[in-house]
Amino acid sequence: MNNQSTSDDSDRATVTMWTDGACKGNPGVGGWGVWMTSGAHTKELFGGENHTTNNRMELMAVIEGLRALKRPCDVNLHVDSTYVMKGITSWIHGWKRNGWRTADKKPVKNAELWRELDDQVTRHRVTWTWVKGHSGDVGNDKADELANKGVELVRSTTSSTPTEPPSRHMPATKE
Image 1 (cartoon, rainbow, N blue to C red):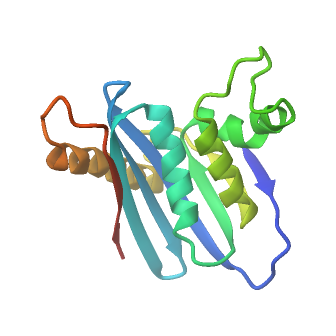
Image 2 (image 1 turned 120 degrees about the vertical axis):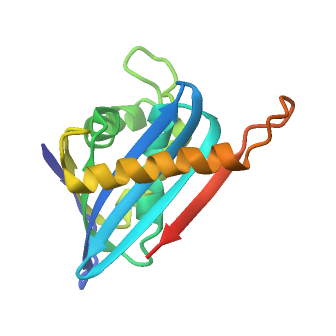
């Protein structure tokens, strides 16, 4: 399944990106991962949050991946989340028309992340591709590995004090 959004800038680099989210408990400790390539260059990103959901981590992976691009690019973006895929290519148009409400008039879950993703997508020309998770796709497997690193990052840096507020861990990068 492919879908493309466009923007008018020219002379863009082409980036291929795989993203994934993970959550241990849902809600629970979550992580997100991004693996991207452009020519001979690769970049890894990962991070996470303490009290979160898998859907939030799937969204954060795409947002952080697009945010990491320093200039507008042609992005071939591979996701294994039907929530993200359908949300950004189909549902978002109705949500925006309906004031960020679903067809049954309920507030859109994770609306702040959908808005941020929408903003990031408008900076680039994105071709969306859905891939089946855990099916041997090398890029998806790498993004999954990075998302799990994000979970471990949160677990290793979060105090067990029950009164501590939820924490958000920023991206770790490796080139």
